[in-house]
Length: 169
Image (tube, rainbow, N blue to C red; front, side, top):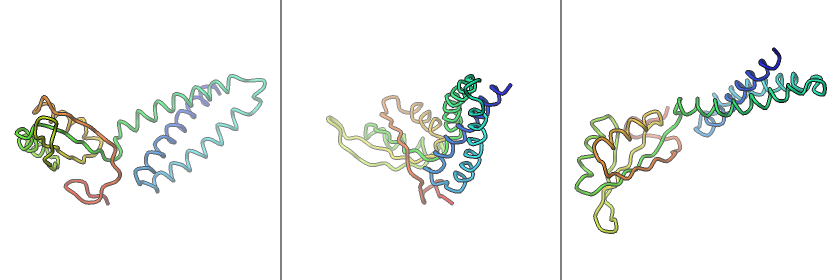
């Protein structure tokens, strides 16, 4: 029974650590610090259980290591589902398609800025969008459903101040 407790507690602790790191890098220092307090408290308790009589019960180490591994996986999965933060989406299309695509994107509730650029053979429109990470897949779907030859890139963006639907509190 102690092995299951160590394994599950370590999963929770490492998952919290993953979320803490993401929150702090996204500017959520207070929430990240609170999670860090819980995380380190759990770590001390878990390590105490693992190190107690470790030479006669080495399976505790395996439960700890397994929980660590599973916690990394689960923490990154949870973070992806929460979609904390902001992404920058850039889309490159032929100039004659840019304005029409921008209107589809705006009609779907996203803000977009269109800039003219030059490709090797044609004039292009580059569409810049900043969106909450939770909505990136939705935006990409709008783009792909309305423009089959669009070049789409997605990058992580730091916290945004101002802009349509992007104001930070």
